[in-house]
Length: 122
Image (cartoon, rainbow, N blue to C red; front, side, top):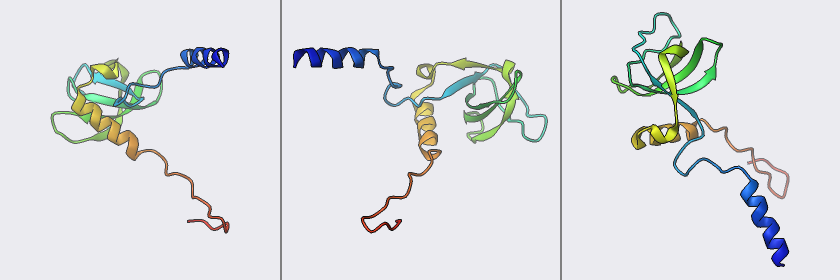
């Protein structure tokens, strides 16, 4: 029994840890410069805005969502990578991280339908 418990403890120690409670598993950047959003599909951001990276578009551009900003509006679009720097989520203020967590929950796909004993879908 003790040997079995020791194996379990070793396996748990080797498994990767989940993100800390209250921190979404997302890539976050902080705007280094203002970006005016010069073309349709571009995002407007100001220096210091926090942006959740949605997609790595190419070597020069990211697609992201501004979650903090001077306007208070969330917007999605592309922006040059050299206008922002990746930051650790523990460097993001708690109120903004809470907003990111809520967005992460909203964007989860719905669970699959559950079958009843009679084979019907709900």
